[in-house]
Amino acid sequence: MRSRNPVFSRRGFSRDNGYAGFDTAPQAGGPAVATQGNPYAQPTGNPYAQNPYAQNPYGQQDVQHGAPPQAPAAAGRMTIDDVVMRTGTTLGVLIVFAALAWALLPVDDANLGRSYGIGIGAALIAMVLGLVQSFKRKAAPALILTYAAFEGVFLGVISSVVDNRIADGAAMQAVLGTMAVFVGVLVAYKAGWIRVNRRFYGFVMAAALGFILLMGVNLLFAVIGGGDGLGFRSGPLGIIFGVIGIILGACFLALDFKQVEDGLAYGAPREEAWLAAFGLTLTLVWLYLEFLRLIAIFSSSD
Image (cartoon, rainbow, N blue to C red; front, side):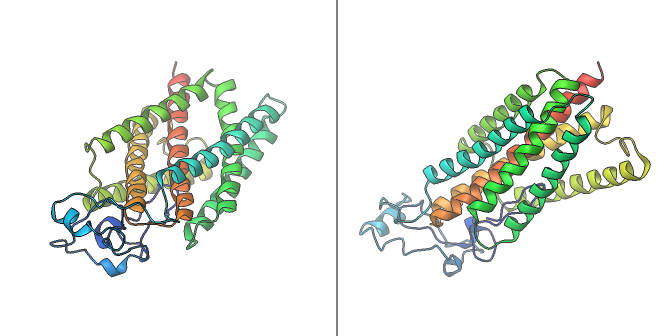
């Protein structure tokens, strides 16, 4: 399916950017998906689809009984290990550069302006790189890792500012909060408590669009009039919108997990694991920043 992030859109695992879970056929070794009765089923539209019985002489019997084919996945196809390794690599680069920025860019009164300027500049470069990757037809590992490096510089600076000047220990609390949401959504998704379908996708997209528009208007008023604009990111309203942002991030994690699941089931090539890593990194950064902002608001109100 076409999974998106509140900041950047990203391509899913179908050629027409449709819903891979609805308009494609599974690969050999993937879960059996019944196409009969599915108004969106178009087996020929999947660029990764293979004959589900080509490698498994018992495939027809398996599908008839509702069990997934037991043939091994084709060589060169994405596996869960590929997704884990690429995601770990991307997050590792981000964390290393965040740590370097924290250590090398002091945020005392004498150096705050310079460090903050470098952080904002890194954030803008990361945004451009992320947008470039989002519009590319294929994953570019070097581009994704470069994005992670610049995003890490920004996170290192902003985390240092909040942790050292607003709320001691805020960065670690934000990390723990992000990890808790990740684990919670993963457990809920695997248990079937969260069902990602077209309705869920549409609701999340509409909510994210409204959220981003409001934040954009708030930023515009802040630039024109100074202060915090309309107050959507500070005080009581900031807390409300911070919670909404975390909920949206959790929803996008569910979409990310669905994207990975579809890629495995429908035979995405191995390099597509970089797209999954890119999407998960974007969502985790979103969650971390929302937690960091909430912690800063609560600490400022004390």
